Length: 388
Image (tube, rainbow, N blue to C red; front, side, top):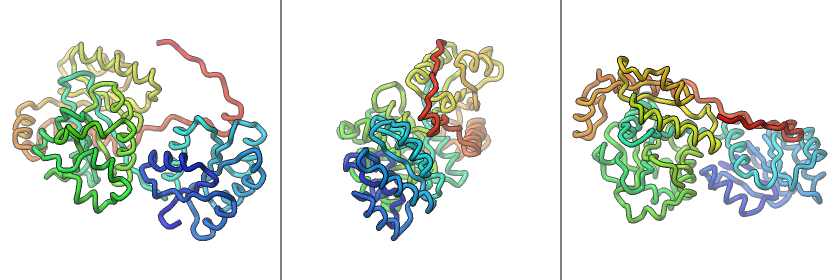
């Protein structure tokens, strides 16, 4: 089981494939058909996480396996056929961390990913999506410079342009898109860090760039499911992934936002921009995005504007975590030369403020929404729905 931190016991081939794709590492899963196979696998190498399928005809034997695995320090997740209170309590006593059933596959992906990170078996990067309140907010400037600032802080960074037809990142950075999102999606099983290093184009600033706009004819190869898989895959190879090109709520942007750890809602101090930010924030909440993942950044900030940080926060009902000053001349010169603003105007307000934003994002990750514990799963509370 060398290099395979996940043990899947009695799971279906479909579950194995879906979980591998969702985590971005199909090769990380070692699947065995039964308890005997699990014990043989664990005797060779201890996995970080075990997923054990429990059925009515194989409950006792598999719960005994759960007890053995938990005793060895393995984090165990049980997949049951239904939420039987007696089985859930028995699983809890045996040492299982979670009890899930069919229909909770997305929660399974999140649970396994969190357990892998907590164990130290897998180190995953973070994904930050830059979402403009409307067109003309300077999202590509912020996304590329945020990626550059993260790289300057010693991180391995990739900026991904998800406007599959008219993305701006390659143009802003004066680059050719030799290796695309479609290429990564088609080759994830054989790509490793070294091959990514030589395949994915890299800007002179040190930032890797993935886009599709140089090969628009292949854009139909990149469906929403493929986008989610590519982003999860990139988390295994980069400290930070920054997303640009998220201008609407189509299938591709929503698939990307689902994977993102944080969403920077970019706004300027103009009434239409703030109104649009309010509408987008509300829609994201309605779609189930936790408020803790939504952060407001004010671009082209002016202290003298009557639309203050407080006004924006009260209108959008989200915290303004950063402001980025306006320096049109320095940005124009840098874009015309295909460089980041640090190369052209190191003392620019843009450079200073984006560096501060990068430091803030790397200093503390937003807290994930708490998941229900096994006891909460066993005895669920009613959830009230409040109107706005």
